[in-house]
Amino acid sequence: MDFNDTPEEAAFRAEARAWLEANAPRPTAAKRGDAAHLAAAKVWQAKKAAAGYAQIAWPKEWGGGGGTPIQLIIFAQEESKYAQNYGYFQIGLGMCVPTVMAFGDEETTKRFVGPAVRGEEIWCQLFSEPSAGSDVAGVRTRAVRDGDDWVINGQKMWTSGAHYSDFGIVLVRTNPDVPKHKGLTMFWLNMKSRGIEVRPIHQMSGGRDFNEVYFTDVRVKDSQRLGPVDDGWRVALVTLMNERLAVGGGADVDYSTILRLARELRTETGPALADLSFREKLADWFVQSEGLKNTRMRTMTALSRGQAPGPESAIGKIIAANQLQDLSNAAVEMQDQYGIICDPALAPLAAAFQSSLLSSAGLRIAGGTDEILKNIIAERVLGLPGDIRVDKDVAFKELPTGR
Image (cartoon, rainbow, N blue to C red; front, top):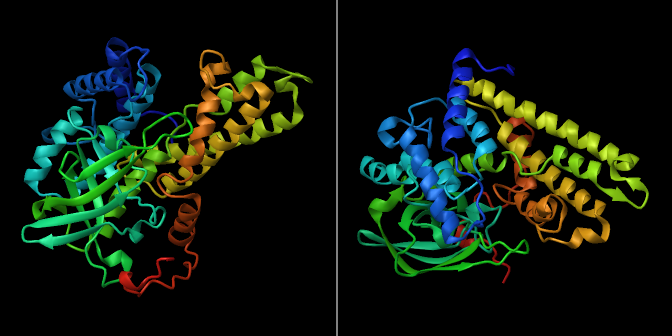
């Protein structure tokens, strides 16, 4: 493993840093979800695209920079120091559009990649359902063939950004007469299509990023299909792999943030940093963080050498999500009764820990639950025997529904 940039990588980092210093937007008072915030995000995305920094590793003919995966990571590292995290385009560019590029025809790819890179169109991913969260293959939203069209009916749940998205990819059941993994098909669709209803979910953190999405006789063309009929599970795996890599990224707060809080905060027994039990936790978080950093460096080293990274994203996602929840909970408890104050103007560090505590539990579900990812690591990395599956050869329509 190599911790240092190559001369070429160092030159690119210096170039990116200089460009960001001259062009990156400064923090604004607008909040995520506000029209002004979304508008600012689109302006910044368009500026990056014009300079070739929006999707560095994608071919130039698709609106990318024609660069390498390691350059993409370097730019993201430098951008995090200058620009505020808008996040509106992460799902589209990180998960949906790559799926379209992999399984759509040339006309579809040409139509969607450029506008997505420039921030003109936003995408969402319609997978989870009330009865199919971690078990993605258990989706019940149906698509029935009607001539050159398919008619979709059903419900999706926890769809991030559906309320401001222009397009989406949706996984549906097209054949209930075969086992659940074999009767799925993927489509892209216009989120403004007749019959689509989006209902934002008010989260306990105060955000409204997630949505319920209802489909009532929504018609899509067969030309909107991604991959063969009933082969949607293979298509979905491409999307899920990219999702877990994204969710496994760095968090807004880490051990260094809580260390800063402990240095400034006094408890009834004295400085928070003097508490021995807290110092033990701090040491554990530091070791975990260093392990995560080195694991990500393994990924960067593989990318730098032109190799495909291994299973590090699944490992990193489990560790990072659990650490964030544990660390945020400890930081709020450290503030004693004042920990319930969520007002950024009053709480320490602009209520960063209160916010991360309310959202961190969801990260242990998003992109694959802890249990699912542990199974993947056990079976596909360590080669351990797979879980017993009594539904493996049972037609989907014959599975018990719990009613």
